[in-house]
Length: 165
Image 1 (tube, rainbow, N blue to C red):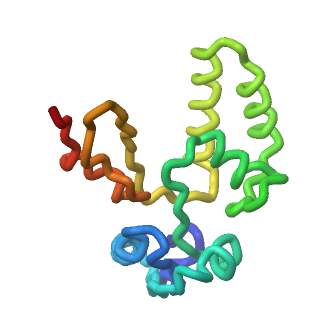
Image 2: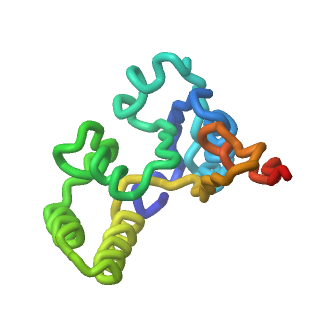
């Protein structure tokens, strides 16, 4: 923070909602963690029915949710210069050229390697601060019951799954 000219810290408002389970709790946790480095983030709970029209991609500091969306879909929706919601204003011509090259690569192993490199560059240089990652399992089989149907973290409760019969 001192290197950024903010040795005394900074006060921000972190906008969140209850549109997806856990977003409000996550915002509280994030604000506590940011306090450790001098960012005093006041959590503001916004109405879920207007969050994605009035806050998402409009306010300067907000909690986003891209759960269950594969990396390439996230890229197309939020990380390309012409995307519908380029949340972080990511505009890196070399990165975009690398994405084009990766998508044109017919060999799967090489394509995955190129995409992995792009993800690493986003991690190091992009505008997202990823607060959580969650794997999701989709299960299907005759006689299977208790498969979680919720979105977000609600989909992770696989301890309730049973194979009947």
